[in-house]
Length: 446
Image (tube, rainbow, N blue to C red; front, top):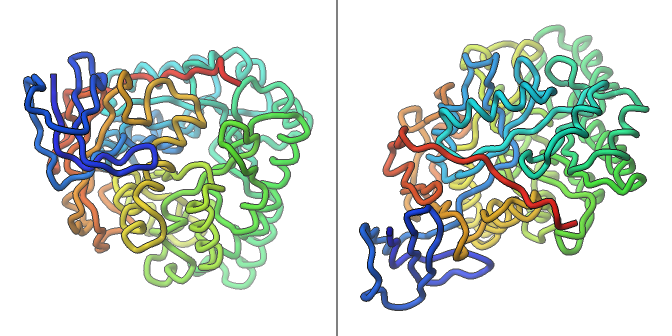
């Protein structure tokens, strides 16, 4: 038995002093609000002055394995995850080969079982011709279906209208979409190439991959979902207008939900001059008005979850000119401290951070026995201290060894991370012997 005592437990909308007893099966045995003198434990962790949160669940990461392991891999990026208090992740299918078959999907699960420090699930990718594969999956063991309605790796852009209609009509599970209108982006690219040649300034990224391109594609996805009574989750919302497409009310009853990523809440287009390619993401980081609207939607609960779109590239790749520079960056290690820093700045409460990053992902994806500090749930936990932390290369766990936040001082530091009751990260070091588990889902509840 392991006892974490004297922590400020942040859970289910409350912050209160208490202790958590973890049994030898990695489950939360008891939550104690009061003296622990008579509690028997083999190990006692004094968490006085620390916050105890449920582990973060990140529904969108790119760990680059197989095929792109010069950028990152499941092992290295799971280390970055647990160093940031992320105990469970859902990894995207645009690898090489793309995860669009049962065989390639199960290869990832086998690989994660060998090397992942965090709990894991993997998306099955949609193509114009794999609907039968998608319908054959057991979605009590797979997080969902990923649909690219914008450019992607390989053949994963689904642009056949018949396929799109059938997918939304017949999909047995939640569909998550990357929404950017390809025709709009191509027209914008041609215009800016004519204006600047190959030397397009990075600040033009927000105009090329514009709010219009995002809204046009997101609106189409929302219309398809509502027409077919499908469950749609729009990933990485980046514009104010897209918020209006989302359902409101209790999370369980929403048909169209949205995710926002930490970088769209932290940066604005005013930051391109300073950070350049380091903040080149797809969808693009847009105006301060867009950022402020997204922040307000997180605070109000209109946004369903906050994630990262963690997508490492090498420093050399990111040093290229605009058209040759890949979009994306590493963020999974610093998303929780970033969100807590914004809470400290008055954007929202620490309880809102826990709701958006822990509770709601578990509810939205119907993950079994995770996302909360509850008796009988897996002890996926993180101890956090309100203590400044400056991001620098020496603390970065990601294989790419850079961060768009380098030089930034955040207000909180992750002290310890527990995955299934085992301490997998403590004071800067990952216990590389510990392995996470495959996430399970309870899709019996409609």
